Length: 444
Image (cartoon, rainbow, N blue to C red):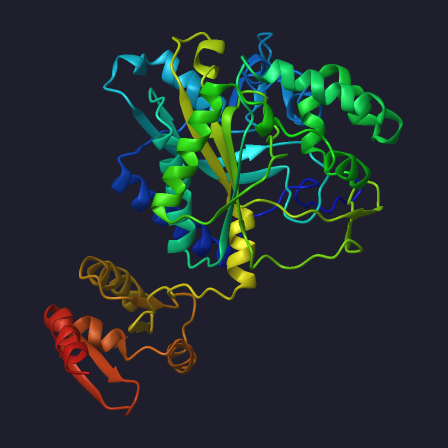
């Protein structure tokens, strides 16, 4: 058989033990903030009906057109690995009749998502996100609270100089007129756009404002701004959102070309960046693992979201407004490492069980469980027989005491407690072992 070198699939990665501490810290922080603001946890399946995303996110979005992992089951169902978190939560909201609960309904989630993107810095095909969603509330205060929640989490994670970019993309009353203005502007510059954006002029012109190609960025910079063409209701709504942000002292700036890459958004959209993000010049690039070509690195938001007042109805539910956002965990972890944010180290064991002989090993297994129940950190090396080797391991770990059990101690029901700092040893009865260890640890 041909020798195969097994590796993670292209664009995917292992979350190694060194990173698990960061993931746990982010989870614990998100959970703490969620509990304070009254959000309840929800978990949705990793696979959903593919149409949930094509209908909810939009057929002409990059996610649906290019990035979804779609599969056909043996029963003929067309499913997709979830590419984002909001549509599945909306589906669950509808399916389980949450519209009948006291409104607003606040939900949060944490898990893996999948997009078949070009592998590059900070972008993976399996990536982790946490998100927050609020249903049943039209007040502009909801957008402000969602932004505040994410801002609080990043602040708790010791991020500084956070910048919130915010915009309004209107609704179905004022957006059609703006689209006409935008298309008229883009038609005369069509030849200068990238291939995708030339197609988007007809299919979905707002997506051009989200394009990362440099030549499209130049054209976008002179395009008409939707914020200048909002209807009165959308204008007043957005004005109130900004007033809430001002009152809360959140640092924001208007980005009139921010639209996000999902069609379900209405009115307010936002992204949160760290101004401490590693500076990347226009000449910096990364090698694409598939094509082996150099590609430009673009900055990525830590958080993105907005309001989606038509999504619940679009997916078959009642006419219920919603608002939410999601945060990229890998990006946050990378920034935490770059900023050298220190996490509490796991507590080290203070006791080491050293055993000599088969009967002592059996007894040590029982003692090990007793120390677990007593919540005393304990280490062992049951695979080693040499006392000298085990004492060397105990010294390397840095435990305070080593308990030595041999055949003699097993027969007599005793253990030897060795002080690793001074080398002093004392024999005690096995039934008083926990008590004696606790006494010594307390006096240290």
